Length: 69
Image (tube, rainbow, N blue to C red; front, side):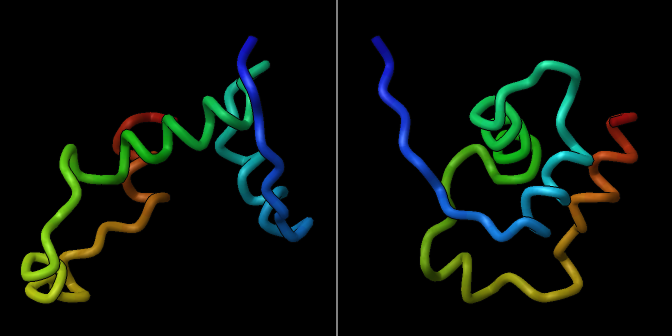
């Protein structure tokens, strides 16, 4: 049997997450899907993080729009 944890969210944060939730999708699957779609395949190194510039950031909404979600 799988175990689960509880993550405290403000009501506004939960409402924002609901906008991206597919029908009958669990919050666990939603969070994992968003992470898979927005994060690099491998975590960046500390030096790579330092090199990242603000203008290289792509907002989640833009990514979801491109994916048709």
